[in-house]
Length: 163
Image (cartoon, rainbow, N blue to C red; front, side, top):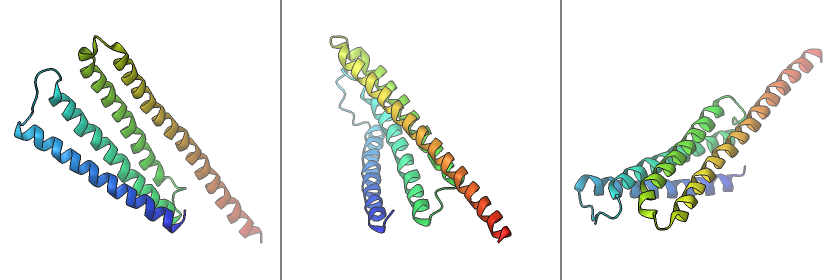
């Protein structure tokens, strides 16, 4: 990965992380100050708590991606240390999906006249789980690459001994 690509990705990660921290701080401030303009039609407090937790899951993912980009830049991504970050990313995506399903459940009673909204929201939750499965497949590819790298290193060592 080139330097320009790494810098661009890191710039995007910084902007997104800064934005999520800002939104998260505003949500926490609204919850703590009690300035909740609820009219009773939608339970905003639970939705705000779920949003804060969901943003936290996204932030964990952003930090792990940053670490993986650092490993790519150093040429150490094909090691067992990378699995820790990929596993955390998978866990954060699954957690975000569970939080989305919770939002769907909280929102569902208000959608009795239009249950299609709840079905669409459930579909979005399944799509989020699908992203976790895609990352799991990529983790498997990483495991194969690490195994090949270890095997290549062993073969190179044997070849060096022969020569």
